[in-house]
Length: 203
Image (cartoon, rainbow, N blue to C red; front, side, top):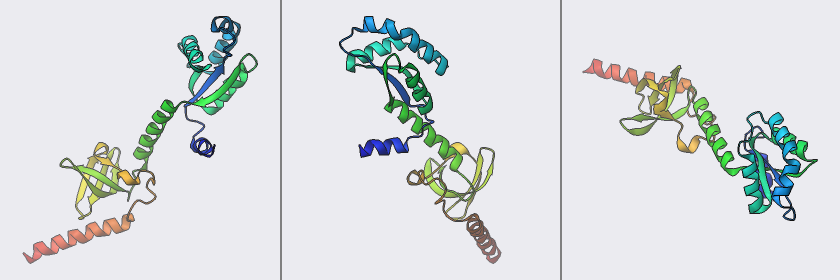
């Protein structure tokens, strides 16, 4: 029960991963039961779930045959699912479950969007240079283009966003552990340029 509670606590109620199930007793044939509740269920789904639920009857029948429960609507927020379950609760027993496949999809989308939003100035990243990923630090941004400095202080200007990614181990700590402050990065760049300049003068 603890793991279930932890999963529910970590779940964003606004994610469209909730399914409303109806339970049907195995003592009543589906062919007799469904016509008695169909109109109420279809009306509630149309009103509360504008996207509809195509193939609902087949999905419900298949689910009922397998385990006595069938889905009447999928990919809802928790609030939408609870509203629908309450609405049809007077005609049939209902339950709200989390669809693991939808949850996996939603978490992937969320991770991708967070990664895109999280690359900020002074953020430690990796960028693609000659088909290999090397570490660097973001020092500038213009639209989808990023300017980076590698660990040797070399500046790479206007790299496409597709060539930059967060280090695999740091995607969970988005930006907060993002490496050196921008001042330190810039001073490192300036220091390298000064060294190069002085070396040229000596030559």
